[in-house]
Image (cartoon, rainbow, N blue to C red; front, top):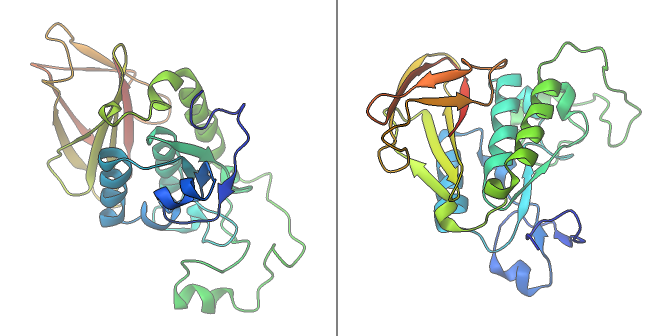
Length: 257
């Protein structure tokens, strides 16, 4: 049985670390710390190194936000950040995609101010009603792209479950990019590969060139984009097993072959 199969009852520890100690204590999942680091350049890099390359002892919640943190759509990048982080959390090894109610609507009002709020945030929110203690409602008429994108990300998670739920370290490959704000990694098995590309710079377009010599067949001339309709074209050409494109500010691609 897969480590986070929906048929298995989860015993989740409210532990922000992802450590063997939680396994020894009888838990089979933890909250984890993705929500705390993936909006930062260095934090995202560390998360990929830890979860992807080093590997973790047990599954964790792929949570972009929770009831004690700032809303994802209220962080730098707004809804662009919400979307890239949610898809990222669907792709990470041993991550359990997690939706905190209101995230899918692009909600910006926090439920509580317990974790990771700046002093300016706390000053801005001081005296305002918070849904953890006060009556509140979501704006269901909000014009948001987060909801349809969230649905698409979960469709991809289900469609490529054999790749994405594989906890083996060799199923994750962190790739080098030509800019510190451009991140790229592959999830793969013996038959399918997914390439995630992200420009987390909210202001600038960046050229992206990724060598796929070790992962792409010589006869492969095109790769398909699973995010067409949201970002990029339906298909991209590949020359000499090198992928080249321009990523707009906060833009991402998810390519497959």
